Length: 341
Ligand code: SF4
Image (cartoon, rainbow, N blue to C red):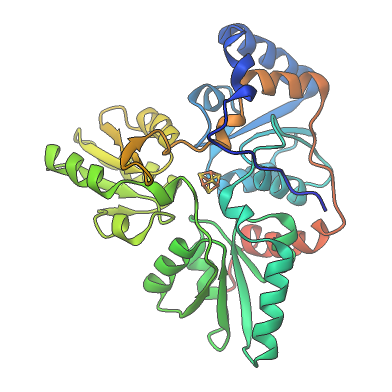
């Protein structure tokens, strides 16, 4: 099986070189015309650039976009996000053509859990007499999903954990921070895979506390992929959809310190323009200096040019793989079927 090759996110951004060559407004017009011609729908994750969210027919988190991909009738989907999201769309809608602006857009979390390693660890646990079910965050490759019993997103995790029979041990992969947080809020003991997101891992606690000192009334919102030292200071812990709902429900102008990928400020400002949103910066651990690492380099591979090119050339495409069939069963059960009460 071929998984995306992740290049060093610190490398010169050769893949962005064309991004300044063309007029964004002209590109948007071209995309609109091609979209009609192809009868395509564009889905953009909240962590992509604001322009890509503006041209999208659907925006959202992984859960909402996976459900959108399954429910829309357009025969062609352009998925502005990262590789595992395009895979999930294809798995839930095998009959559709799923294009991605850049197949190299990977995810550090997905990379941290390779199927061979997971299968070996599951076998070791079972050989030791442990009765486990494996719960995977959606940020995993389809090959890993095919080895799991349940898939969660930050939007449905608690509900899915409740569906795991109480007499089973839970092996949670790949995000140790989300797993630890879920274990605390659900009271379920979990074996945690040692993966983490390169973006959420590096939020600077010093800068967060400094920003809070400068804005003492500010509400701190943090994604559960953040480490414990950030979550301990958060007033609101939740995925991107929960953040949007939270700010939209407050009418009074309020300042929010936001600890998640910095492009998330775009949909927050859009749904609640009365507020002020301050992104919490990341820290470069080797030098101690703050950096722009609260932006996901993989999401940044999505550009208007690449969306135009994908629609024009009808590639690159997520192609069906044999192991998608097993992943399809677990994805449908977890994301599309309601819990039996
Ligand atoms: S922000 Fe983190 S979890 Fe999300 S796609 Fe980027 S590397 Fe993966």
